[in-house]
Image (cartoon, rainbow, N blue to C red):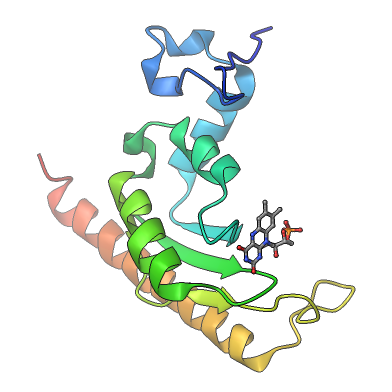
Length: 159
Ligand SMILES: Cc1cc2nc3c(=O)[nH]c(=O)nc-3n(C[C@H](O)[C@H](O)[C@H](O)COP(=O)(O)O)c2cc1C
């Protein structure tokens, strides 16, 4: 068994790519990394915390090497109880973080302000605007994902 290594802030202190021998990393880390590597694209669904990215989300994503994320399309879905601070949140905070990991964010995002009441008890969305935006995010992930895959097949990865 490999216990979690926590820093003084309670976050995991050693990301997977900092291990000299990655087989010594905790099992959850190795398994999650394999899932990220196997994915053709990602959708990040996140609340807004104090007009910022939730630290639990960035801390979790930090645990995996950028190589696992690189060249993958990524959609953003964010929700909050009040307004979503779109300009600050998406454009200034979230996109640079995801790009730094090597993800290719879709231009279309799905923003859900006042999330309470927009889903029924079965988790189905009751809001036409949110549904339409979500469909656009998914379309763009598929479009960017196949364009990237075709390019990699034809020419390989950049050096
Ligand atoms: C620490 C913390 C900070 C939050 N800050 C905001 C905020 O700044 N604006 C907002 O509209 N909602 C805020 N919320 C509400 C969340 O965006 C979210 O809607 C709420 O946590 C319910 O979603 P969840 O059950 O997935 O956490 C905050 C919640 C928490 C726990």
